Image (cartoon, rainbow, N blue to C red; front, side, top):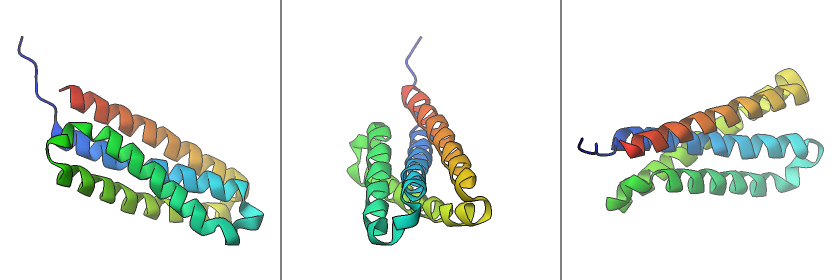
Length: 125
């Protein structure tokens, strides 16, 4: 039976979703841990989330390596979407406090895992 080529669109969507959710998880957990002393470390926290999401998206989109431009755009989209998800940790904190942040982080962690598995399945074809 011939081997199927990877589904590059599925890989890209999975990489974007997983990278975005990873960014959201890192920032949300940072907000949870540093809730009372957030102001001085917020830029560093956002930078850490951006790096985590970008690395996740870049690694998951390895089948797109034939064209580095596609892989880079996919990573940039993951970071942008991840920042949007990260900013949603503020309403979660405001509405439900620490339990809301924990629930939001768990939800994003599950989403990152599911999307990462989806991207890997699509890469196999």
